[in-house]
Amino acid sequence: MEYVDSPRHKGLRQKMVNALRAKGISDARVLAAMNLVPRHFFLDSAIDWLAYTDDKAVKIAAGQTISRPFTVATQTQLLQVKPGEKVLEIGTGSGYQAAVLCALGVDLHSIERQKELHDGAQKILGIMGYRLELVFGDGFEGLPGQAPFDKIIITCGAGEMPWKLLNQLAVGGRMVIPMGSGAQLTMHVYERVDERNFREIKYGECAFVPMLKGVEN
View 1 (tube, rainbow, N blue to C red):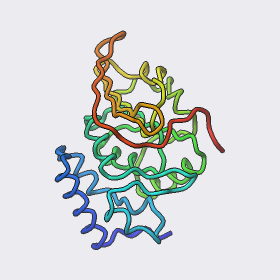
View 2: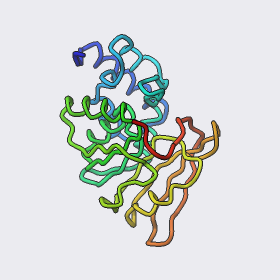
View 3: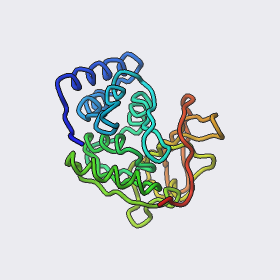
View 4: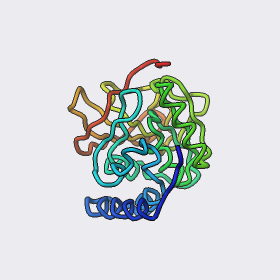
């Protein structure tokens, strides 16, 4: 596959960013990062036009989806990352969210349980020149050897609290996670106040594929 970011793609991406701003995304750094990353690189070239024309999730490999731009922008804005912060992502998927975080200058560590998706993300993110740690493994386990993390982002819907992840969050850190059962998911932010206490903030409803344990080769 040839990766080309043409003037047409850039123009469509600018329209996407303008639409995100109109929908309430106000973080200028998040908008700039999403304007920088070619979302169409993460889709099959036959449907690359879907990357910017519809604010919808798009099916990718392994029965998964690449989240809609508004979802990526919302989670990234809630995460409140700063350049150089150590960030853990659960659910690499296509690699698009990872690319946006890399464009924001974080030290990113990302886990994917589907080998096909892990390999695909590793390839495209390498081609794009992003430097990060990509791990094939169980997201529920996190990366205890790399903890603590300043920020943690979960890009799939958790039916239960992943306590191991919460405990890998640094004091003063934030974890953004969709939680709920079935299609009834709500975006949550957890802030670690001290070693024992967390502050919970609930945001609006959202839609994600489920967070599953184990790995699939």
